[in-house]
Length: 106
Image (tube, rainbow, N blue to C red):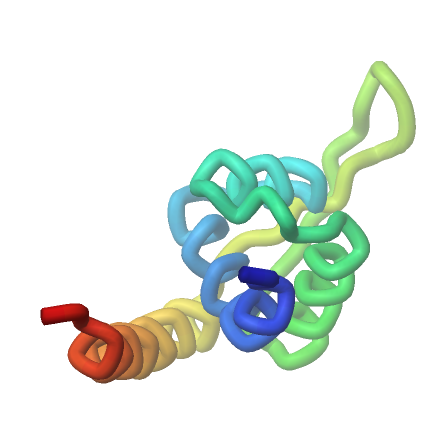
């Protein structure tokens, strides 16, 4: 099954969940998603999601200098981001429960 369409619908939630564990820069978030089993997530999708969440006021950011290349822009959760994470987590869990009851094989 191609999960790319499913992923588009929950990428905001997944990114917020990764950042709830701690601040991170773009590729660090990508690695967190892949480590959780979302291997099909694209780098560009995650970077776009981070920008969109930041522009929506759900994340804050800060820059950390790097000796090994360009500076890294870190993202962190703020109060509105934590509220969105709680809200969308509840919605996801209710949806997943509904789908589980629909697709259970007797």
